Amino acid sequence: MNALTDLTPQALAAQFAEWGAPPSHAARLLRHFYNRGGTVDWDELLVGKALQERILRELPLRSASVSARHESTDGTVKFLLAMARGGSTETVLMTTPYAERAAGCVSSQIGCAMGCDFCASTRRGLERNLEAGEIVEQFLYLRAEALATNRRLSTLVFMGMGEPFHNFENVVEAIRRIASPDLGGLGWRQVTVSTVGIVPGIRALADLDLNINLALSLHAPDDATRATIVPANRRFPVAEIIDATKYFYEKTGRITNIEYCMLAGINDSDEHARMLAELLRGFRTHINLIPYNFTGAGVSGRMYTRPQQERLDSFLKIVRAAGFIAHFRVTRGDDVNAACGQLRETMQA
Ligand code: SAH
Image 1 (cartoon, rainbow, N blue to C red):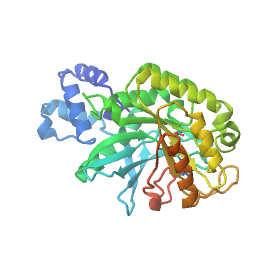
Image 2 (spheres, helix red, strand yellow):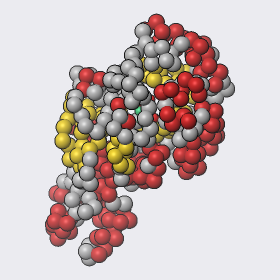
Image 3 (cartoon, helix red, strand yellow):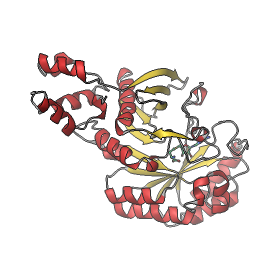
Image 4 (cartoon, rainbow, N blue to C red):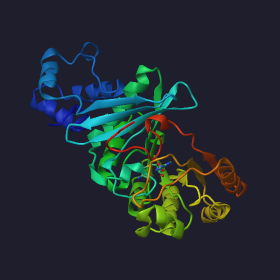
């Protein structure tokens, strides 16, 4: 059965019309529901007793439920959500440098087929795509958590489990609801989709011109290095991915974030830093260096470690000296396995 989270305003209006209720209540109910993080205050909403009862009887508000909530000592909260359609997924609310704001991270799939060797989300392969409503569910739980702690959910990144461009339609539909001023009201520019580098997906998103941000999980400047840690590189080599990313910038004017997970002895040499600077020369990007978070042995059996601080600093210095804006991503939530790369469908944090 569909839940309210699954419905577009049009679909809900049609349902109300079928019930003989005013279709105009649909948009009002949805906006109220989204603003409150997935709950309804019937006294405030006032849609009439008959409609209220019918909704309560026949239209579940949500289809996901929280099966575990883990809070990190740094304030990051990770939810394990059980999906009515089967399977479970993880979603994370992070603190930001601003006390009154929080940043959300949602999953687009249950599991992941990409096989990146240092990432836990892919270890058991792909179970299934999440539906648009199931992505909206995550957003609503994050918003509710932020509201409960007097914060505003100010950004949302698709950096949880899964490859968003392998679930393109549902991801775009979810973003349309989350960002729409009439529903989630988050704002297009507050949304970032992160990809391993699925070239047709990058180009298709550029063509939609949604004014959202793109992040590219690059992790290595050259095919030889990248192919050993990111199997998807065999399909789309670095040069093609960068071309598509430039196309995204030309079409949308949005600056791409380059994500680079730093793995000791694999992609962290000064030579890699110089190659990265060369690869991105003349292209306006922000480089996010993500010191590796522990995830255990990769599919290859390889164990990874985080580079020493001097190595991280040396790498950062080289890309900055080449004129790039570059930062380390602050690790959040790693004590409850909520940090980048640590999400998986069965949680043992
Ligand atoms: N499939 C998409 C969305 C997932 S984003 C993508 O690849 O972009 C997950 C982010 O976490 C990616 O930037 C990834 O590189 C990073 N990541 C994965 N494993 C990590 C780890 N062990 N330590 C630090 N970052 C990691």
